[in-house]
Structures are given as structure tokens and as C-alpha cells.
Length: 256
Image (tube, rainbow, N blue to C red):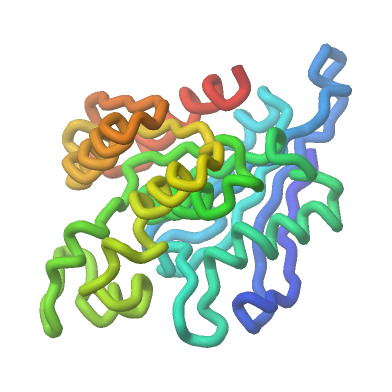
């Protein structure tokens, strides 16, 4: 196996950045050894980092795929107005292109997936829907699908996580965020209007998770829109126990 921490200059973020990567290249002696390797991009949650996914390397070895784990800061993986704040472009374009040129991986849509948890679950849905020509499958666990909530915030207000200023920095004008491209629902509508095929979607959330209602709302939106997807709920809170279980279950879906 090969583990990397890679540094390069990001034009999208206007600075040197780093990401982690895992490639299971040990001899296997079975039919998967010479199979074309797929690539999965993993997006961490709020206050998290690229180090958060090393515990899944045994899954990557089992299914013989490469893991790419960027640092997304607390950006919600969105493009902001400020110079050097283009996290969606960084993950969906620049990082994918770097992986292609440097490692010869993620060369085709059918070989490229994106996964995330919490803020990263939002990021996986948003980035995957923003770049449907790049990502063929999305896994989103306990996703922070908070657009409808933060659209109600006023100057000086906050929720249990952050304040109006933070959400404005990430999402832009909260008065218009529902109709902006920072809203995954808007991206779904745009793709449907243009008759562009959507990535396949897998979602899961714990029944004791504080984000459960928001995940149910998006699930219902997809159902009402006629978008085929997989949605699961089971006992669990917003923690690593649930994510570990469902990243492993979702791998069966990714590589079925």
C-alpha cells in the first residue's frame, strides 16, 4: 500500500495546499489485482481535516480503490466571492485534474466517486451535482443540508453551530441562497431542466442525529422530483460510530 501527503500550489485557493492519498498497490493474487482502479474523494466535516479518513484504508484495500482526502477548512466546499475561496472549484476541477495528471486516476466519470460526512456530506452532494460530468456516484452521510434553515437568519443571529457572518461568507447572500447555485436543490432542478444525467446518490442519517429532519427533507425533495436515489436511516447520532458503519455499507453500493 502507498500513503501520501501531497503539497501543491492551488490556483483556486491562491496558496499551497495539502491533501492525503491512499493507493492499495500491494499484490493481491485475485481477480481485482489487474482491475482498473477507481478513485473516491472523501470530504470531511466542520472542524475536521484530511486526516479523518485513514480508518477506511482497509475498505479501500478490500475494494481496490484509491482514496483522495482534501482539506476543506470550514468552507462547506463552496466557491466564495473572496479571492482564494473557491473550494468547490478546487475539489471538483483542480484537484481532480491534478490526480489525473499525476497518477493517471479518475480519468473517467464512471471511475470517479465523491463521499462526505456532515459538512462534507453537503459538499459531496453539492460538488457531485455541480460536476455531473466528473462524478458518477455520491455518498452523503448525516449531511448538513442547512440552506433552508440559514435562509431565515438575520444579521446578528446564529444557530447552534455558527453565526450569520460565517454563513454569509460561505453561502453568500442568505436572502437569495435558496435560488442560488449554492443550494443542492437548485442544482438538481437545473440538471433536470437541461436533461443532464445526475450522479447516483446514496444518503444515510442516524435517527438521533440533529440533522435528521434536514436529511429527510432533501430525501423527500428528491422523491418528489422523481430523482432515483438510496436513502437509509438507522439508530445513531452525529458521530464516528455511525459514519464508520455507513461508509462501509455504502462501499458495497459503490462497488456492487
